[in-house]
Image (cartoon, rainbow, N blue to C red; front, side, top):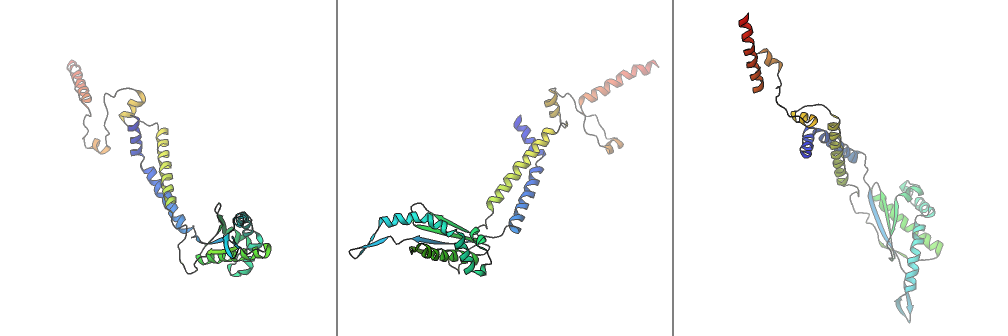
Length: 258
């Protein structure tokens, strides 16, 4: 019985979730296409090396140097994001039109555990600007390490291709559209069941039976005004016809007595 009731509610108020789905999904589409700016990304990998030493004229891997380089990576991460490095990038690349703080907000530094690789990632409104930022930070960082720490153990492993034309990283909005659809559907059905819960009107015989717990014996059909004017009204049920016949039979003796 409960399932039938739920199906009736869905059938009666289906237009509420449908309307919300159309409105919310349309709003999400307009928002993503009009207000969400495309974001482009460029990255470069830096390797902290110089792990070889010379013994008897041969190059061998120095484990102590590897451990030292791994410990230096955390220090290098702090140097990369330092105001001095970012200011150096801003001074060397005035064409960017950005302050040191703005450049820092567009740069991320990623590392992997027990790996001698530092990945610099820059995001901007166009790919060319992202390439300029990541290359500028890479060069400024290596120059600062050489000047401050007197070390030359950083090499660019990969660099972004300035001639490439990758698409924006935020071009796919499928997840947002799916989320908007599900949110609209849940909200719509929630409103529909709330409206049904607050609605105390009696519309059908089933409503009477469920609310009052009584069985319906007869019903009066809906009568249109034009049918009454044209004399098309008929008794709705056998009970009504029987009552009409009984009424006529009771009236006849009264008329004969007159």
